Length: 110
Image (tube, rainbow, N blue to C red; front, side, top):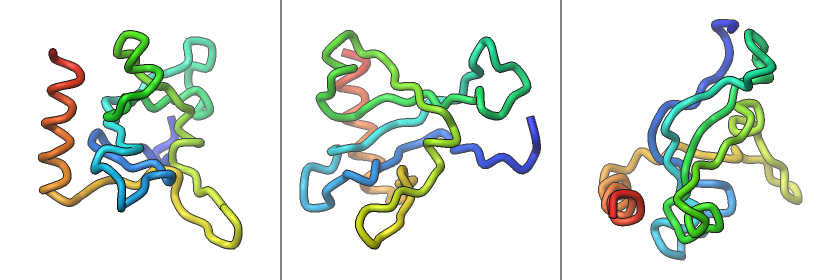
């Protein structure tokens, strides 16, 4: 892969649909790593972000599955109306991260 490709770090992210006035974990996700589409080796379009929801979502109810999204889509900006913003934003607040870690433990290790 090319060295100038933006790669999301492991950690916690909010999707642009996150409501800051709602629960701390609404539209919160944990990026756990990257994967490569088996038919697109050495092609940046084949890089997938592997992540999981930290709220009661379809994939969680179906057996604690992971979500997979093309890296380009994960890191792109979204325009809604006259505003443009990242599709996913990394969470850096230590107190929010601590709370999301507790939620992750309840959801995925129980």
